[in-house]
Length: 513
Image 1 (cartoon, one colour):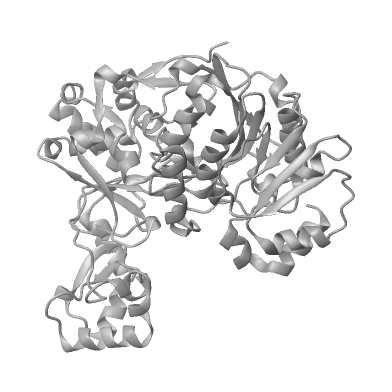
Image 2: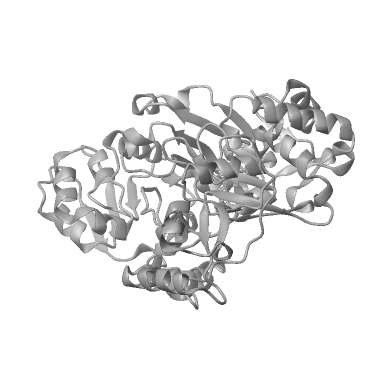
């Protein structure tokens, strides 16, 4: 990273950068994007999120008209004062790009600000502007980067190119369908490059990142999916064989695209499967807003003399469960080891001891937290029932699926599955499927990739996962199920013959050459 970047980071501090979602662009990445965009033949570039001018620096020595926008006056002032030997004329406007409409650009390069929907600046005004100018209603979960990309695609003239750095979670999310639909419309999407060197590119990144290449001047029959393992690989990556080359007609905006980065892809056998929601639904665990107050160790409850009826058994952290089948004796062992597996339940009438504990919590400010201050009373918990299936929210290298045979609730470390009338008879079968090799591969297609190989599931990601139809599950006899569950309890993994049972759920196909 250049010294002026380091000086800027020191001067403004992390809170300021987070406010504006600033992740500064690596010079080699900027050079790659600029070179690709200018190959269109158009001698102009526009950067909607100028920052410290990484893309302007990348055109040093070239005769290019450079324009840009930047909402943060502080970073713009810093850039103006910094030594600038680029030599190019640049027109940089201090403005909110998402509220500045009516322009057109030949080539666009951008590393947009990244903020999740909860911290989206001027969210309501931006949503209104998208309706008025594009007749497009943004999903409530759209992040700033996706909004930037949608607007830039609408402003790209028919003779130029667009190169965008993006958090790739949108490839597997519901709100991303709008973006993907616009990308594949008329066949102008050229490549999606996943940067597996995200820590090299963005040391502070918390989500996986990639580069979108879009050519408005030409239509393409296929979209190439590449993976760059290092910044050095990026320079020649478009000359290399892609991981996958997918026909545009096969790309659907509502499907999960992260699977296209797998060397050997497969599709799910639609005739043999149904969405998981056919059997019931996953929902997030209990969000207390103050785990230090609500999650109690048995010794703590005894010290406060909390009545047992004012406590609920609860899994408060993922590592507390170490076996695939979680039974009552496993929970009792957690209590005996004095782990925080009791949940304070203060709703309704409560004892003097509980009242004293609540008052102590108020003295410590737990009632003023974001979630607690919006509850009445603040110590009232969300209503939940124990879930027979638990699935980890965050994971690396494979999710944790638990068959819960206790009455323990769960916090947000797990999503919990509640069966409907149909699903009540298929709990164990769903469990072994989700634990099987094929089940894991199919389910993982719906995960969201974050930085440092960290994956995440949202409840609806899981509810839309394809699982076997009842007639496929019914091929497994009760005797076989008993044998399978006994094996998993003893070995803590799924036997090979169970894995083979579900291999037919996948239709294997190799990359198109």
